[in-house]
Length: 386
Image (cartoon, rainbow, N blue to C red; front, side, top):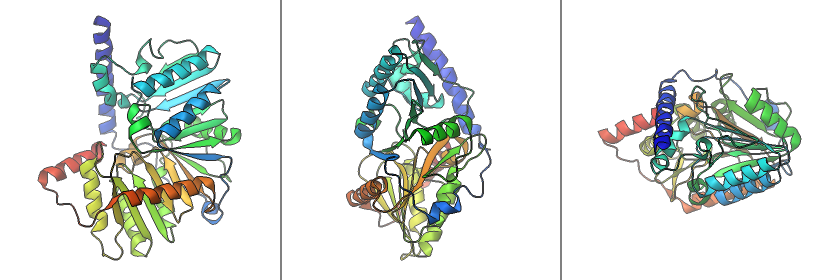
């Protein structure tokens, strides 16, 4: 009991410190460039076949993660925001320990602020496996670090043997595995895995030319919002956005402008997000209160989804960890991939078909939401906190 109280006290101190950094880091990370995506990105589609695989929902994603860890021969690097002591959390721990036992070097980096979302589990005596000896702490061949002084890192990825990467929006917790709708992507190429590793771990520039572009928000630069607005501005026919949390003013204005020039804009949001709910409602009112013929269409997905994907003209996609919020756009480390493929490429075709199915399953918003003073305060609080 005494040891548990010590761990809990350390956790609370770390969480408070991280929250203060998170809330008051208003100046953001690195500077926001004017351009990110090279001109050739828009003019020439690339072949993703053999290099990229789209993973839809938690079963597909975690099945792929487990198989990849099982096949690891030399190294596994894990970065996550949340890691809970639940069924899938413990299963990943077991897989990593098994890999470590056969000599694989395992590196685990977990964001300190994300631990706040594990508080209820900790109060029930189930702290994250990154903190416990029964989990990953002090296990041979496993290096674990949770740095309370580091910038908030909201990215999630697994790098295995410098040959494969799985990355996207899913944390390590049961809700991501079996309950929520979400996306991950897999890079199956040693060359581009090494490029990914150089980008996210060393802030090296992304190679040009390349079959896709990995963008990063960190202390050197915040690229993701610029790249998102670039693909929106270059859209000629359609934009589909499926996101959980949406309140960034620059992205909202970009969508309204392309809609005004005749681009069909469809936005899919969860009907009841786990947080940021009222901020989402304010965004819906902003984008739908335009000229009726040019206003973007908004659809409410019936279940909780945690997606962070964009598709323009059916061939250019963005998949990653960044929410459409000021926090993700300016003050948190994030990773998002941009890819331009031919319409029949399996990666882009799978994404397009899934987004179309999600719209079919969703309910279109026909009238603005009526929000009282308290709801507007909650929306403002949610917008700038999350």
